[in-house]
Length: 298
Image (cartoon, rainbow, N blue to C red; front, side):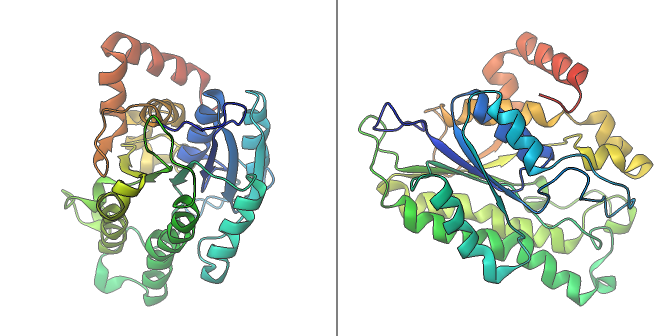
C-alpha cells in the first residue's frame, strides 16, 4: 500500500527507537523490501547504552542499524532524539523530514520510555516516573505524529490507492486488557497500561478523522519479543526469552502489512498471528527457525 507516484523515488520510512529491538528489526526488514530510512534513537554509537535493569552495556546503536540497512541498498539517515525531551520532539521530526528528502511515506511509532517503575503498583509509583512515562509513551508520540500528519496531508495521494501516508503504531496488549498478575508480581503497572491505552487510541481516531484524506493508520502489537534488553535481563524476563520471537519476525510482519490492502484502516493487528496467517504455518515455522539461528542479526 505504500507506493510513490514517482517510480524513480524509493519510499521513505521513519522509524523511532531503531537502535535495537523491534525498531531495528522493522528498519532492516523495510530496507530489505525497498525503503529508504530515517531512524531515530538515543544510542548513536555502539557500547554507549546500558540496560537499566542490570547496568550492563546493551548491544545496538543507530550506526549499526544504519550499516546493516545500507547492505540492503537503502539510503539511511540517523537523527539523535530523546522522547523525554518534549521541547525537541517537533524539531526532531523536522530534522528527520529534511534528511528524508522532504517526503516521508511511512511513520513507525516505536520508541517508548524504558526505565524504572514498571514493576510497582500505583501507590508506590514515583510521581516523577508517572510524568516520565506519560511524556515518553503518550505525549511525545502524539506531538511527533501531529507534526508528521501536517506534513503527510500535503503528500500527493497515490492514484491507485488514494493513500498519502501510512502510520504504524507499535502498541501493546497492556493497552487493551488487565494483566493476570499485579505489577509487583509479574504484571504490568497501571502507568504503563494507561499510557499504552491512550497511545492505542491514536490509530482508530486518526483513521476516523483522516482516512478519507488518504491517511492509513494501524495498531500493531508485536507480542512477546526476545529483544537485546530482554535477553540481557536474565531470570526476570526469561519467560519472554523462551516464548518470544526475534525482532526479525516483527520486521517481516511489518513489511507484509505495508503492502496488504485487505487490512481495514484503524484496526488492531497482532503481528505474529497475522504473519502466521499470511505465510502459512509451514513457512512461518521456517522463518522462526531461521531467525532463531541467526540470533539478533538479520
